Image (cartoon, rainbow, N blue to C red; front, side, top):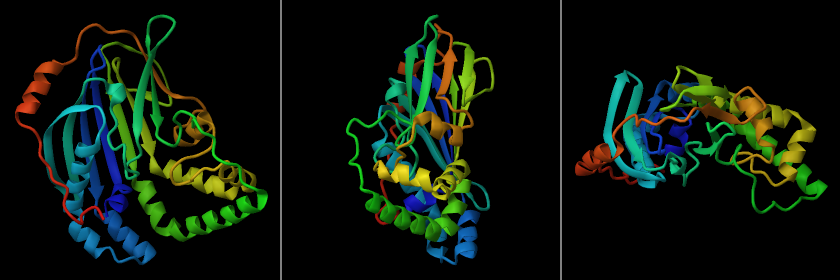
Length: 294
């Protein structure tokens, strides 16, 4: 059930980044059980078992992230709580030696993967870019095979029917999905695109599932566009054969990269080595629960 529940999540990542790119990432994943009840009433799907297992499923999702995350040297501060009657939250902190190598859930499609890269600008500033795996990341190395016109037409009809059949429950789930990444830098924020400057040293990137769902509706409503996307071999549930800026305009608002420009900073924001050593003294041990993620 992890795949289903993850679509209902609010995910918050708070990244504190040192000049050497070492980082502390505080992750919070919150799920509202009311959404399962909404799916039950809207789509007529029995969700009682999922509701009963939700807390264990959240533990399983946290364990999955800890077991598969890339670039993590240590985990600490794990906790599960019920903030309100129907809201279950898991929280944990990751330490990454190089934040550009960090990815929370790289081997699964439950949580859209966000990765960061950085280059040096003409004035010595750091240019940070964010990509979402399969949506606006780097182009494929191997081009997908081209499809004949009749194959494209058949695929369009199949995918549109699947989308319409799934729309009642998936729209509820996608409209609930929110992923927020707040990045705190030692240098000052100089400029942003498709991100919001929240203080002199911090910027926020926000992905909303409802914008992704609206994009999918727009693609399926456009005969030429859906044929072009599918004809180029895209799997609409996993990736899009569209230019990144075109997708970003749908998802974030501007037809531009998701980017943050930051002046170079010299002073670390936290003692990475000391905190990692402390975390390793008391490692977090979570076991995946058999059957919870099925």
